[in-house]
Image (cartoon, rainbow, N blue to C red; front, side, top):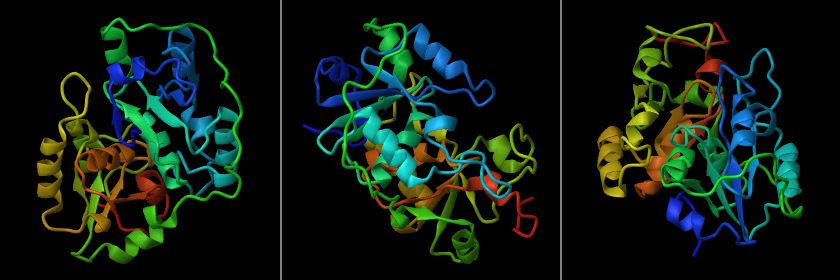
Length: 283
């Protein structure tokens, strides 16, 4: 059996010694860039390799890019090979924050064609709460892989800023902002130089996808909530964004869990959009 959305704590625990399963720790703190790796060294799920949001899952920041631009696909492909990711491998990603960072790696692997990747439901906090085993120190990938050369991010899953401008006034599309309500409204902006949101967007804070224990809500509940959010809009015309294209991936996981497939990502998100003074902004 393979997993492409979520995997339970119990299921992962039963596969810790499975050579066809790879585990990645994606813990990160936007305000303390070394925190995640420090936490990983202090304790992680056995077999997990640490993946850094800025260094491994993002590219070079430019004057026009977001805070976390997608990396060159060939650079990411080379990392996947070094990590041992091959077509037959089941990948599991986790973090400490309900998947809000791990979901980025989930989306990136799906976007280069690796379907067997799942987010650990409940993440590291639930693993620890169940007294599952942990290891300290640094682990290396079990063995290098090969075959990722030439991969590209699937362009059908992505939109750029020009694409967004072209659909702003089109009622057939739904633009969904995954940030907290106060950032969406512009009343608070701790990370980007300009507060507000893209005109016409609606707000769906990614934390609403979760139960109080940090696990995802059931497929039925998520389906009902997202169908209400889309209000008849085709899933293929749903576009998600956030501050820098990271937590918005949480919404894509949730929709996949709900069986709502085809939604796309504006990877540049608000931190790219707001850099251009010519682009419309609200308020």
